[in-house]
Length: 496
Image 1 (cartoon, rainbow, N blue to C red):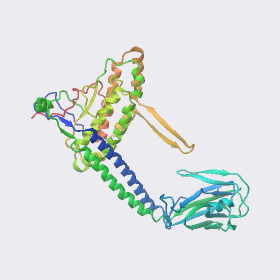
Image 2: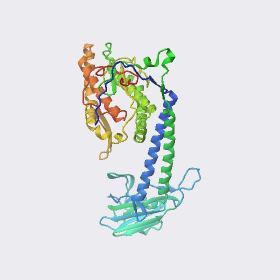
Image 3: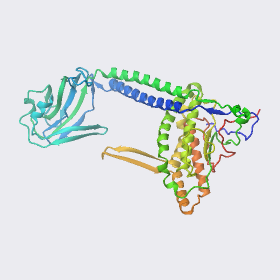
């Protein structure tokens, strides 16, 4: 892993011209819209691919079949909710036409008793089960398998189900029973009972459908996904192309060489992070900064979504060209700058009470700035393994900043969340309470926190494919980079 050390100096006789940006509101909105469209396209492609995979791998004797699972109840019958597959289209609503699903096959095997399985018109089944104790399937989860029933109180049925004449398809007896239904319009109900009508129904059941439309639907989704993806990429390209231009330094009467000069560049890593502690930080404002920053959080949520979509675009550009598209680089750098200002104002530093500007630009007069040197060339293959190489850093970053997550507890049918505080948050809260009671921010604590922040941002730039140099394992504490303060301009080339 390369660990080059920059040897930039504060002055150079041949500085490069300053590079400005053309990131207008319209361009930003185009990129955001393109990213949303691209994400929608990915969802469509995933859906199409999943359907095609299911059609090719999950069929049994030509039927797309569910896993075999146990259904059981202490009552006399288990029924489905009313299945309204094929209504007559009299309202103008979209409906399925006959033959779309093909035949439906229900397979059931009783657990100790002869079993009956049948499909009949909903009104006829309801009349037969009127006043009968039964369980209606309301919801089914397959991973893990769990069934929720709606229980109807009542008595035993008037007779065995096999004696009824209204079944469109049925099967009854010992062992595995198969009922095949040639679908037709109407409202239907599936019924599972013991063949003799006794209580205590238990059977292993699976349901399959021919679903001959599935491969065509999958192919249609894949084609639509590719078309939508092309639109999204086009919008991103239109927004990002030529978003960077040389700044006309001469327009202000300043020579181009002088305009590009940038004193004091980073000497350790080409990601420069600066954060100057404001001596006027108030005692109590930090308690409500989370509320004041809600507008920033909303905007950054969108910007970071776009950041990662553009990083995927940049990944393929680097893979095939060895270059990070300059317009995308400037946009992603702007997102990082915006984020760093918000973090510095809030709970990664509490370094200032100056409200951060809503801007992707450098904002050199703000006490927190960030600069990343644009790489002229990048490794074609390194983006394929950066996630693996970065694992040691990512473990440390997780300790520095903590994390949170959420999930669903299937066993208890409950939503849960988990959050772990990181070292940065703990140190900043300690500093906040010291500030609250003493009016003074401990300088050593601030310097140490800035070192952790700097480490995290270097790793973000590396994982975001913006630099190939491996981040150093070192804690550079203090408000400025070792060797100088990062400036907004491009790095001057070394003197001949």
